[in-house]
Length: 229
Length: 220
Image (cartoon, rainbow over all chains, first blue to last red):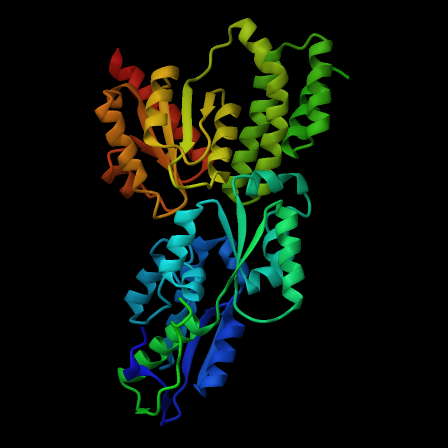
């Protein structure tokens, strides 16, 4: 459910929210902010950090500390993302917020739905639009499958299906998702989502920052996030 | 090719995971009178130790480790029956599996590779292993160590469920329990009553050796 009290806010004093965002969702963050008319500055970190998740919290901490020392308003567009609580430690230390959930899958499809997906089939390999689009770079190359294609079974042999959490309507991704599933030797299933879950999470971050000290004006409700799950 | 040259080449071929060459050199070595123990202890194990060291230093990553491990496994397939005939003792017996509800096995497989490379006998139960299967396998194989692997914070609590199952079956004191996986920490391992934890595959081998040694001393 959406908290109507935080819907559709605008900042009257021209302050900007600096969002440190995972590269996998940075463009969606930018689109949502533009659509909502939010004043944000996005600092995108490489999505490849997900292959070294132990480095994410330090990277975020470095940038966030610098921005805060410059008097900026800061939020983090990461979920836990395999940091196993480290990103929460950083956010708590610095007094900033992050997206809720364990991964962006929770943000896009909702925590309950993700739990249902894994309850029904633990061997589910999830894709997002970003992963479909960048699979060769973020997965194939990073896992060394370009050099050692025979390792595909070692990495994916225990999975039973590929489930694409489809956010957009880019038709070119349909064929790419099929290619990914074929490469992994798994059946492809598609679960339609939108970016409204991300929008909702960003809105909470945006509004919490300004509710703490910024000047905020309530306007009319417009968000319909959450209705897809 | 001299024996030293062959061992050096086998070491190098294993290091880079050149599987066909590793098989070829292993067979060539055996055919020219090199003992299985020499091939194992003077080429294959040192090579895999170097793989582990490079991984720890950040010079090698998961693909390099997997590919080297697969090459070594092929050599071991050839050598294992011969080593059994010669009565070479293993360092210990290690039973391992990914816990129920979790299908992730890359880390576990890396541990398998490093353990085998270090001279352990490894029994891998695979993924999504329920507590009763661990209990049954411990009864059957009588391992020195059982290792539980989990990749998810949601499946990590199965460690404690497994330990409880071992206690209920009267097996807890008979086997060393090690745990590992991306979300696992030493603190968590301590909190659930595991005997050992390691952050990576090389560390798991070192810790398993230490724990077996400690237990042997305690039993003297």
